[in-house]
Length: 132
Ligand SMILES: [Zn+2]
Image (cartoon, rainbow, N blue to C red; front, side):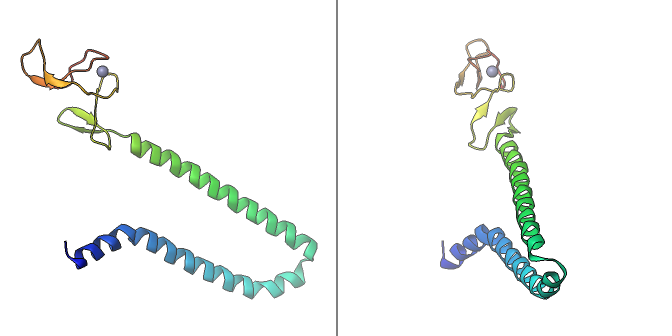
């Protein structure tokens, strides 16, 4: 593998992180400019005793929002990890382990089945034969 191919792989692997970082940088810059533009007017309109609780509530609301987004993404990632893919009549997980479609347990017994005389999976837990 050449150096250019390695560089391409590194760029592709980190492109999402770089895009998120660039977007967060732009959002931070815009938020700073907006804050600098409205800070004098805000401090003249509102007394300091109101601004600090508002700032605290805003930070708390943002933390709760980030927590909710994290919870939602965690459930989605768990769903994606646990999702099985079907190939050759067998369910496969992300580690390419075969699972029994009847009971969901990992199939580890691949060999010649005694009853049929041909090769296939046999689930020892549910005695099902998912493929033949
Ligand atoms: Zn089974």
